[in-house]
Length: 234
Ligand SMILES: Cc1cc2nc3c(=O)[nH]c(=O)nc-3n(C[C@H](O)[C@H](O)[C@H](O)COP(=O)(O)O)c2cc1C
Image 1 (cartoon, helix red, strand yellow):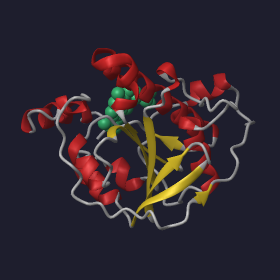
Image 2 (spheres, rainbow, N blue to C red):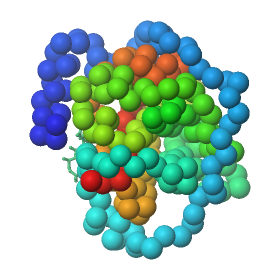
Image 3 (cartoon, helix red, strand yellow):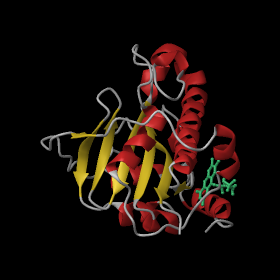
Image 4 (cartoon, rainbow, N blue to C red):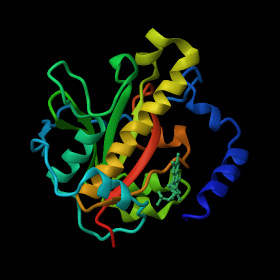
């Protein structure tokens, strides 16, 4: 799929006219078809993130490569927590996070799609909220242009954005740019953290926005921007 994914975007854009514009905050969007969320499940506390590793930043940068094939081994809760902390974890008493954010408005939401459930990350408490129970990876694979990396990875981290958090201050013109830049910051943090944990990951931009939202029953205002399958490299 590596060499074909850009071509696939073109084909899918042609087939699904209007799909590309779905990323804009003002677009009218379909509500998710499923709302089988699980607010009654207790939150899952994540182990405190570690503040030290064995690889230097330079080694981590040099080793980062997109990884699309994984073993069957699931991520540990500590590994998943560390990856989510790298994306959006709190790193300052004032609530500032590992990735920068325009106006510290933090429009991003991170989800983890695993064999057992779809979880939403809550940075303030460094915990997981059960969003939906069950394995949504096959559904996600279908709406992400059949990219095998999603089926092969034990976990796919989804970066979604609530555009209104940023647009209330920065308006409709700057907001799409700011939010996309922030998603890039968060994604790069995840990719580098994966290397530092001896894991592998690949950032996926080729998917059908509305269909991903439906497949994962995301709230209407949580617009998916990036999918990042992550696991133990094969
Ligand atoms: C915005 C963006 C979107 C991407 N989307 C996909 C994708 O949908 N599928 C995929 O397999 N790789 C995707 N990639 C990964 C690139 O193919 C990869 O970064 C590139 O081939 C360079 O290889 P490297 O990451 O190992 O340096 C994407 C990368 C970026 C930055």
